[in-house]
Amino acid sequence: MTKEIIQTDKAPQAIGTYSQAVKVDHTVYLSGQIPLVPETMVLVDGEIGVQITQVFENLKAVAIAAGGDLSDVVKLNVFLTDLTHFPIVNEIMGNYFSPPYPARAAIGVAALPKGAQVEMDAVMYLPVQEYPAC
Image (cartoon, rainbow, N blue to C red; front, side, top):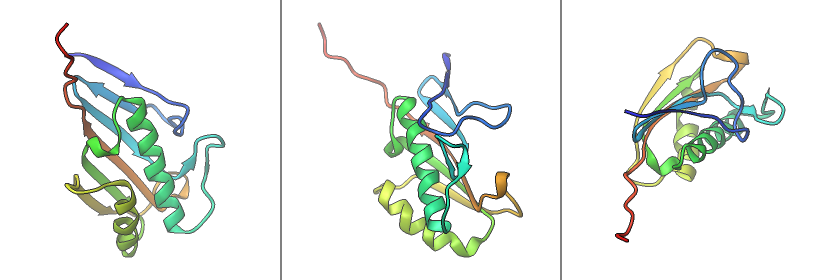
């Protein structure tokens, strides 16, 4: 088993005692992302659609840093402070994922860090790289 800590400046830095992601063999566990702008570490300004988009951009940056992309996500967890925003998640998710979609859960929560309205985490599987014979 190989374990690697994933870190990128293209996503918000961890605001606690966790890593942006941890890669174990071919599986990557992406920590929860809220709609922080990586350069300022401040919540993106705007309505829920803008926040959801920023979260997907943050997850995408970590996925790329781990050697994959969002098409490698097999499980996505969505945390919302207002579940009536779930249709907006579906709409924006269609801009980042195509069939077959990852497994997903949507959970209503009372509050999220820094007053965010949305947070997402994911599990990604990276296929084994096949190299041509020498």
